Image 1 (cartoon, rainbow, N blue to C red):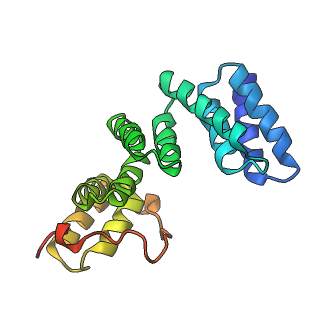
Image 2 (cartoon, one colour):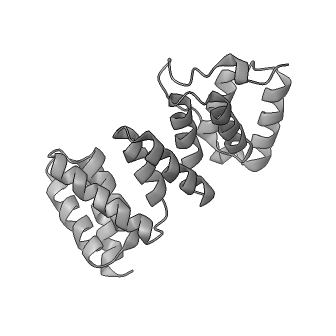
Length: 194
């Protein structure tokens, strides 16, 4: 394992610790980026956006530059993280474009994020379709959301469950997925009618 990979891994671990470890996490992730480690671009951006205690407009701008660089370099996860960040910033159309590209790239986290954005934009039919497709491919969070929306013993719920179970093994399925009680209140008219 080269130095940049070690810096990336250790910096990522320390980023979760916070507190006194934060400065070392920032230094290690920055060193990995300087050494040309692609995934470190996304990890450092994520740290600056969501974990850095001294986050400010300058660190946000730096994170956006890192994500743009990561997208240009086709770093896995970059388009999804850029889309989520743009969504958080209120740039919904740009966020949708980025998340659609992430879905097209096969990013496993992107379908649920894109569905959430589409739901916020009022396109519940497209959101449900994405969630259903993701659940049928074995996406645990998507499955939990879809099953929360459908009557448990409906034909659609049974079909989705069969596809989900065929796409996953029991040890890979999440035991639970947490989200706010008022989340994912899709328009009932877009759900399958039994």
